[in-house]
Image (cartoon, rainbow, N blue to C red):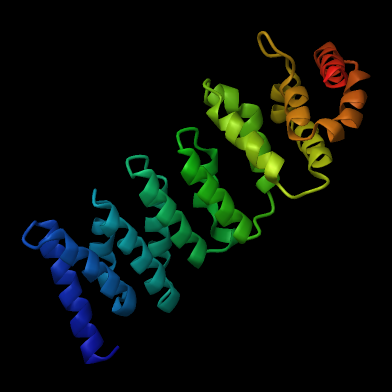
Length: 251
């Protein structure tokens, strides 16, 4: 690192420190964080971490971007750890968490995408952040996207009585470009005991969750699977499946 770059880094660090103490205007800290993205090293990790958890959205976004840029030049595990902690912090605004998701996606791969997966699993994650995490996982070719969405759709009522998670997950399943998705969902549900129990147990005042889910995703494609479920020995399954088939024929 040249002397000029080191001077710029030190100057930017001091500027952010002064702004956080309110000795400098907020705009100066945002510009300084942007400069650290260009010249920063592991020396600036502590101050960027502090900036990332401030209330100023612009500063949070620039700190996250600076972290991503520094990581590309000098991969440091603590940077990824800091970003993962920040993206799971429910006190952060949705806009800040979306920006952090994008930065994580720039510097990680499917082996280290646990933070993005946890964003999907949390019942309190805003829909915009959950969607950003899903898009990031798609860009990383994460292999279990369908399974994560099925979990959200099936367990959604327990996690979120208002139904927002189930609505979001169902909408994402409908949009998913996969001709075999209904059969894969069927196999996922029946291949996991806990998921199967939740999916085929009759809910109060309604049919089994899997029977509800399949026609919402693809009414026509769901018919063969519902017909198979209509012959199941479990009353909770076959009664719900027959009712769903009757409803589809009536439409």
